[in-house]
Image (cartoon, rainbow, N blue to C red; front, side, top):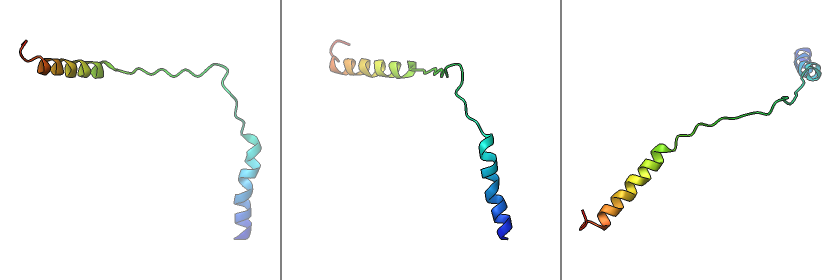
Amino acid sequence: MGRRLLAIAAVPLALGGCITVEAPTEPIVIELNVNIRQEVIYRLAEDAGNTIEENADIF
């Protein structure tokens, strides 16, 4: 049992030198396509509703 645990513990140490991490040569580009149309329309509708309520005698 002790030899098995020793062998299992030794495997990551033996493989530790085989792993290399390198930075990419080109910059990382993250494209975010955010749809804000819905929020703008909602705010305009809310503002229009408030304007109608405040000036009910005009309409």
